[in-house]
Length: 149
Image (cartoon, rainbow, N blue to C red; front, side):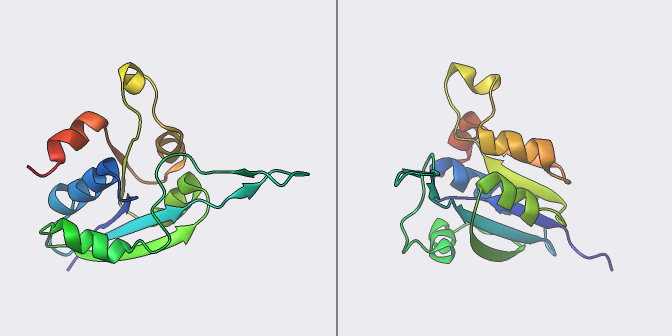
């Protein structure tokens, strides 16, 4: 019997992160597959020679945020096994690393507006560029269609 696929999905609790998770669990995954939901908490980076830190861009869930509880609250039905992991580091680097042995990487993009068709967010761009597996990027428009009614 062939082992199921491994699908890594980057999620952060945002509507677009939820859309990526929903796509991975409802559409991308099948019985026997494993979906690894990854939450990457960016590190604050101290600028050399200063007391200033670079704050992460975009939404970062609160320290008490539970990825397991969030996924359970979404009530997404799936035949796949679901694993969760929270890591600290650069989001693109951590997602590419987590997907090194995966069959598919799924992520949402936080870009919107007129430039969305031309410019992929920095995390998405780096994942598409360096991933060793196929990457599915859920656009804002797709996220809207995948949102629960």
